[in-house]
Length: 80
Length: 80
Image 1: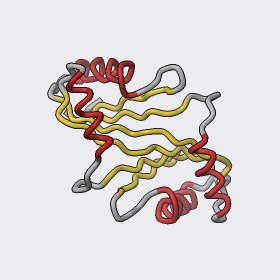
Image 2: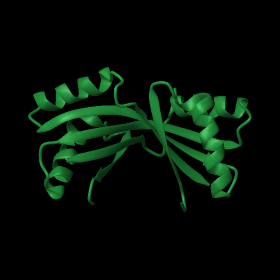
Image 3: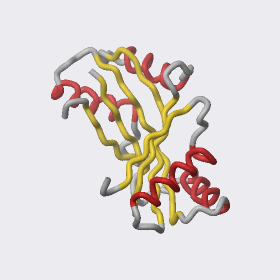
């Protein structure tokens, strides 16, 4: 089963990469107010159970994929 | 208007970061076949027109956000 995790810097957290992207886009002439940059992780899991997958990915995020202090994560499982 | 761009390494392209994440997840005991890592860019645009936003973001991706040779991008505009 395939799943996707979106990991983003939390609201109040400084995001230098996003600021750099925002500045560059403005310099290139794009009408953009701001940008924030995070990570997308596509996973291929052994299980085909949506609920099992969701719980497992939640643990993956807490253990390795995200830093819960400064990042939020959003789990998208195929078929849910 | 808010929009999100998902930028991923294309299918045949080597993804060392994804491989490292996959190996680490397996070492931690997770039942995962593989992982691929890309970027998520959240944009705040001046325009409120979905079609204008979509066209502008497409150009941003080609000019700055993605490397079309090795990366694919997916544009998600609010309200579309």
